[in-house]
Amino acid sequence: MFITFEGGEGSGKSTAIKKLEQALINAGKKVLITREPGGTPISEQIREVILRKENTSMDPWTEAYLYAASRRQHVIEKIKPALEKGIIVISDRYLDSSLAYQGGARGLGIKEVLTLNHFAIDGLFPDLTIFFDLPPEEGLSRISHNSNREVNRLDVERMAFHEKVRAAFYELKTLYPERIHMIDASLTPDEVFAEIEKLIPDLLRK
Ligand code: TYD
Image 1 (cartoon, rainbow, N blue to C red):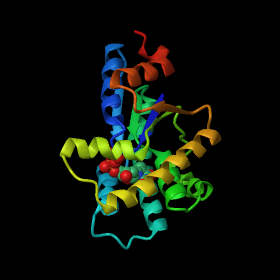
Image 2: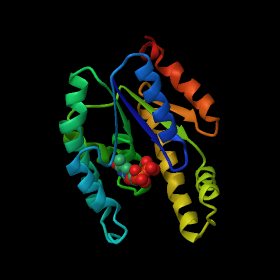
Image 3: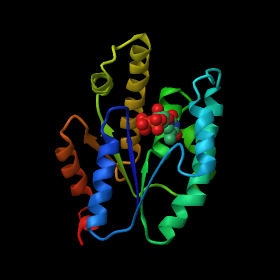
C-alpha cells in the first residue's frame, strides 16, 4: 500500500501524517514515512539544488527534471523495496506535486509533466492520494499567525501561484477520481483524521 499526501503550506498534512503513522503502528502494521523532494541521500542533495534561494534563474523544465530525478532515486532506492517487503509507505508529496506545481502553476502542462515523469515513477502510482484542500489565504494566515509575521508582497504573489496549484489539484481529482481524495483542511485535526480513517478502515484494523 502506497499512500501519498498532498497540500499546501499550513494545510496540516504533516500533523495528519504523524497521526496516521501512530494509528497504523497501533494496528500492528509496518510503516515507512518519507517525503519529496528527498527521502534518500541523493534525492536530498537534489532537493538542496532545487530549493536553494540563489537559484532564481532556474528554468521551469530544469526544475521539473530535477524533481523527477530526485523522485526516480526515491522510487528505486526506497519506496519500491519497502513495498516489496509489505511495508506501508506514506510519502509527504509525490508525483501529483509535480503535476500541480510544474504542470499547472508553472504552466508546463499536466500531460507534459506526466510524460516527463514516466521513467521517474517506473509505473508506480499511489494506491491512495489524500489532498489537503485549503484556501491559500487561510494556509498563509495560519503560518503568519504562528510566526507573528506580516503578510508581504511576495506572499501575495505566492497566493496567486498557490491558487493555480489548487486549481490544478481540482483538475487532477477529475483525472484520477478513484485515487485522489480531497479533505477539507479547514476542519480540526481530529475531524481531518476521522476523514482519513474512513478511507482506509481495513488498514487500521488490527
Ligand atoms: P517543502 O518545504 O518540503 O514543502 P511542504 O512543507 O509545503 O511540503 O518544500 C517542497 C516544495 O516543493 C513545495 O513548495 C512544493 C514543491 N514541489 C514541487 O514544486 N514539485 C514537486 O514535484 C514536489 C515534490 C514539490
